[in-house]
Image (cartoon, rainbow over all chains, first blue to last red):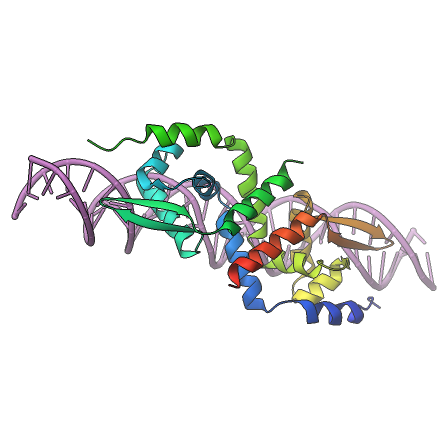
Length: 109
Length: 109
DNA sequence: CAAACATATGAGCAATTATTCATATGAAAG
DNA sequence: CTTTCATATGAATAATTGCTCATATGTTTG
């Protein structure tokens, strides 16, 4: 007879947030889970930058960077402002900085 | 003539961690970027659990759960101990809890 | 030692996704 | 109003990855 877990299961089930929320949480971290996007966020850590500066920094196509910036913006991780022809991107809020900093701590110990 | 970014670029380049580290950081978050793994980590939030309890909780194959637990363990996000036939998994360190909590904050505001 | 239980693992398939390429939009300059 | 610069976007491709299925490993019990 396989062993029983009803005690633990009932307890954990009560604590576990709704599926939809956990899905959103996964989707959020999925966005952090790409080197290009991490580099972009790290680059914007201190100051705003325009798209072509970012592509130059990363040695990547303007198109590729634009695609990723859109992903980041949709997730409210970066924001943008227009100044004439150029568009400047910057970090949307401090959660982004803190999450990255924590991740950094984890891998560098 | 395209506009120049040498000032910003020099500054940011100096601040940016090495590629390898940023890659590792992305790889770490990639692991948080899956609903199943998020659920597992959340379930282990308070207490340890054995593999079959986790699969029962998530309504997933033991095999699928085992595969994900391996991923989590390789990344030092969970640890395990054996007690007879069963193996209990638990959260490896507090970074995991904090990172999830921060992600939660970000999406629920 | 054989049977039952708990977990791990390898190969394969299906789905997701990051980049590229071509092109579109939008703004300033001449 | 045409050209140039800056950015955005859609479609297609290549690579990654989560799950399934079959099977292996490890542990206890009879």
